Amino acid sequence: MKVILRLLYQFHRWLGVALALFMLLWFLSGLVIMYSDSRTISRSEQLANAESLNTQYGLLSLDESWIRSAGQRTLLVSRTEHADATVVEGHLVNLAGAPVWLAEDDKGSRYPLSAEDGHLLEINAELAIDVASRWLTKSGRVNLDKIRYIDQAENAFVPRNYQALAPFHRIAVNDPAGTELLISSKTGEVVSENTRLARVMYLTGNWIHLLKPLDDLGLADIRKKVQLWLGLSATIASLTGLIIGWLRWRPGWRGRPTYSSGRKHPYRDIWNTWHFWSGLIGGTLALTWSFSGFIDTNPGQIFTPAELSRKDLANYVGTETVPDNAQWQYGPIWHQDDQQNIVEVTWRRLENEALIVTTTRDGRRSTYAINGEKANFTASNLQAAVKRVVPGAEISEQVILNDYDSYYYPRHHQNTVDKPLPVLRVQLNDTAKSWFYLDPQDGKLLTKLDNSARLLRWFYSALHHWDFGWLYQRPAWDLWVLLGVGFGLVLSLTSVILGWKRIGMTFRFKKTKTRSTKSGDNSKLAT
Image: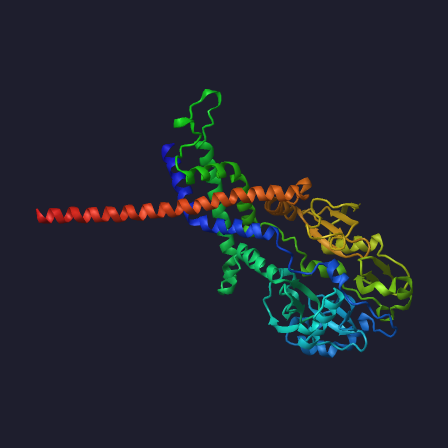
């Protein structure tokens, strides 16, 4: 037993020495992430700063624009598998004062198509500056004469779900805050507005926390593996530390002996003392963060990703086309809605049925059939769409949710425009027990979760972000996470100090021992 304990202590000690600096950086960067502003534009911000749509008649439908742009699109994708793609969704917006369809095909490619003559727009630097000027004017900015084009960036600091819109035009505002805009060169959308402080917080937060420096060193292919092994090692270090802490804790309850001078632990120096107590009290949180970080790398690909795949989305929409798509009647739509506040018209299809969805600046939506009459997708439309994603499965339960549940909920910076309510939750009886969350108003597939994805939600998101129940309500969430990060900082900082001392003691001892051996050999030779 003594041998096992000694091996446990040695294993924890040297694993801690190796990981101390990494864990300190993780806790520091995690603290920054807690209060970093999102670098991307939310749905509600996009709508608030969008240009009002021109209500003039004579605009082309999405289908007409798609047909007229066929030649340009073929030249653009002639060397790829996208040449035979079909349009699955489109958004009519005003881009730099002109009506444009932002079309998406079943391969995931995006195209800005003129709603006046159907040609494919080139989102160049000049147009990007115009878009930026109108965006800033809408949000009440001044000194627009100081807008400056920086460059076109392929790997801008945006979440991975925005990478399909890359590369991005970078526009500097040159205001006191050092604001920059990122505008997609594929669609002309403003995807990010960030200040100098936000960029600094990203670099000291997410960039370090996710080991992004490896990407800059050309090691992007191995970054996930590095995260996996560091996360696993940190989990083992935290677990062995907890075991040692509980083994060495002597609270003196029921008259049991304590250490000398009534101490509850065997350590006399301040650094070991602080390390002991921060590990004993906060070590469980360090363990949950380490373990959930390891799980986030999806070791062995045991969990199904929560993101919707292109295949799922294509199956959900279906392969049939809408026969009278080109005959949409937009006139009645403008008259029935608050036309001054309409900023987007969306064409959405499910198999051979299509809807037109108008969205106002404050996020209110109305749905119409192609002929301009008020309409919605029927329950049978939605059920058939879900079954196309998982062929052969039957619906076991479906319910309208008027409030969020444990799997569909907003982040702290989101509202009901970003995460709409109500939603339709559809459960299938397939082997994976798939759940679908649909927007019943416009039929959009919001998310899909199977057994493994729901398990990942608890093993990763719940243990890493603490985003469940009353604990996710502020300020309870802030107090809980700050408490855990505080213990983690003390634990990792004392690990760095103790690790440095241990390295010094080890190598100094070996050096002294080597010198003593040499002196002994010389004395024998002299003798």
